[in-house]
Length: 365
Image (cartoon, rainbow, N blue to C red; front, side):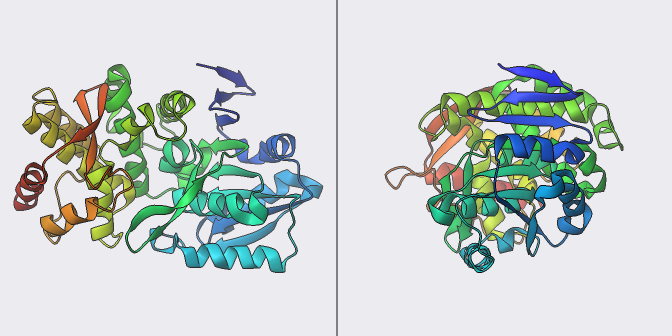
């Protein structure tokens, strides 16, 4: 693992690029950007909530290089082909060429969409991730996945396109709503559940104080989660093997998120998905007994949901899993855990078993 400290920041080697993690990095972002992604012009892509808060600071850090700002409405409902086309047309109208670079300033929606614009504009131009949510810092910005959602499901149209750098300024989390902070924590809990039992335990012990303003535990949590995901991505960028472990909780979680009409935050849906899939693993005999109960307790302490909303139909959720990217040969595959800290991917479960778990969860409402 390649991790170094520089100016009180942690620098983590992801693949061909680094993730920079620290407090106050946004003011120094221009220095990093000009080094890793030198460009004639910069385009900041953000959303209407984040842009007023942080785009001026990012522009100031770029100095004379400056940047033009393009925004989208906030929320998963706007991670669409229509927004991709609108942004692409706006860049073309503004005369951006192949010597431009894109700066993705926002949460996972902005990062995915802006990355997809960068992957396809002029057949691919550089971009830098500047995540402003905990979830984006530890998950969405790491690994080079970009894309948009469709009616059929999440992230079904996209491309692998590595950023030139990830710049995660933990100070911006001070303005993040509590429910979004909890949503991001779900992915940190997932990282511990699939790869590091000791890290999982440290999160358990830090709850609920980790939500306090300027919590000391937050910066090392961000760094450790990035280290875990980076280690996996370096071994398997295109999700042909070990990277599938990162899908724990996502097969049922994505289906629940979609069926909710995105009224559930991503991390909230994944929290439910992790409990369901661990329960499924126990029923199949591949997960250690008691794992689901421990995971459920951890997520509840973090203030996250753990059961299927009563308004959702278990049959529709199950049907939605069949259009998931992780389906193989028309069969749904799950990334489960053998125990807390150890994952097992590529598990095929009978629909009847998955439906039973979904139905039981929905009935507890």
